[in-house]
Length: 195
Length: 195
DNA sequence: CCCTATTTAGACCGATTGGTCTAAATAGTC
DNA sequence: GACTATTTAGACCAATCGGTCTAAATAGGG
Image (cartoon, rainbow over the protein chains, first blue to last red):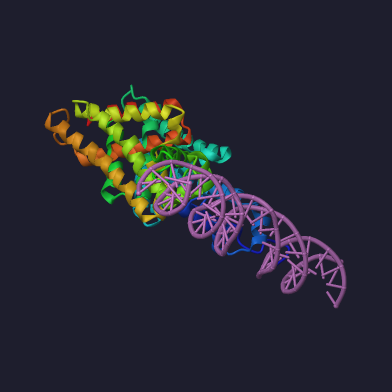
């Protein structure tokens, strides 16, 4: 046991992520974390430098293991508009589950700790810009394929789609009804047709 | 001085609101509050029962003094679609200012403390539902006046407009660029035309 | 089996948290 | 000007915060 790490770092990170996601950064105490991650104080500060550093790793973990797959899966759609719609449908499906009521960790973080921590704030802002760029590229693809009017401003449409997606995450965490969440997606799909 | 309150409660409440709005609930300490409100511990606990109770009053203050006027002003528009557009334009103008980078206190609260405090969570959810209902009634008015297609589903459209508005607040607090925020509003205006 | 590198459990740290309490100061009433 | 109701300033509280440190336990290499 002494020579290599005694616990599954990946597993512990996942548990920490879950906790931060549910309770937010400030409301998650060290005691909470140690209990949930099932490690001791010593290993905690040995493996992760501190609470903030763990949080940063949890954010990256979330980006790679939660956000990434959603867009990866959507990218398999051959129709670029369908790729965008698929993102909305996946987020909707998730938002309707018990799990999904936690919202999106990036959105939660953007509001709670982003404004007070430059590094973290930048990380989530860059992530948002990535989503916007993803939508934008898909819309440009759609235009090239004639799926969308030539005059469509991809950047503007991408921005509004991003806002729609973030809004849905807020509504989900705020406990909005199923009908409201579904309406957002159908309206997004309609928007994609009329774009 | 003994017989009535020694300080301007309204003023103190406004300063507290500002602080909660900027830093969030958890990150705002009693020391912060006392300093900003320029009152002593004694008067604090005399006038407001505690931190949570002050926060609740700050939320109500925000609802009455910040959110209310926006919708009140918009309601003076004779064209119901213009009333909705006016809300978006006002929120945009605010979001572009230094002040507006705080986002919306209700949105911030919905994500940070809403999930952990039923009373507060309900308060913000009800507020969101109010906005949705406002949009909905305006859209129904528009339909009656023939400004909008007869088949338009006012409820669905209202929900997506709400999501768009919340998304804009998230983007503003996350530090999104001017272009992104403006795009959201122009797109919302376009959506209103095609509805 | 000894040595060594590492992890363990948990005592301990100062700082800060939200909240209470008391004694002095204050400004009205009579 | 004494009395009284109230506010003041700030000492004080236990609990918790994130973080450090040490001694015992552990399991590899030689």
